[in-house]
Each structure stands twice: as C-alpha cells, then as structure tokens.
Image (cartoon, rainbow, N blue to C red; front, side, top):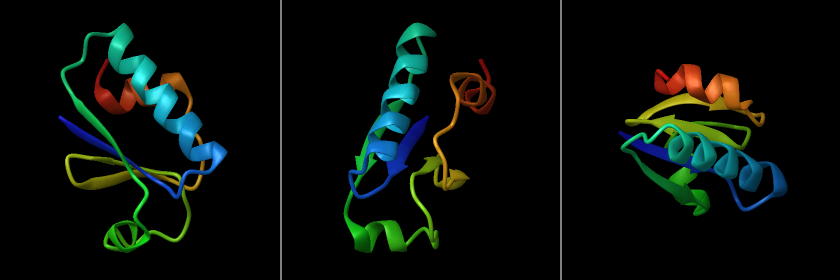
Length: 77
C-alpha cells in the first residue's frame, strides 16, 4: 500500500501525517508513507485544499485532518 500526504508543510499537514503514521505502526500495516510538499506534484492530483491523503494513487481525503478512526476505516483496519 502506498500512502501519500499532500501538503506544503502546514500544521494540518503535519498532523495528518502523524495520525496516519500512528495508525500504521499500531496496527502493523505494511505501507509506504511519504510526504509530498512539492506544489507542482501536488497540483498533479487536481486538489484545491490540503492536506490531502492519497492511497494507491487515488485521492481519498482532502481539505481536513482525518481522525484515527477515519484512517483505520480507510485502511481497512
């Protein structure tokens, strides 16, 4: 599973990354988690608000910090 957090480094983006990282570690999920801060790469996903969460190439969440519960549901935990 490939997970990307899209955002320019704001507090909400960092919080989103931390929440996802915590869920991955606590549930022993095999996934690659990366931050994408390059604005040109972010624009390739056609989003207008950050943070955004991309799972296996598909934008799943955009514009808000997801809860741990929402991340668990998204990742099938």
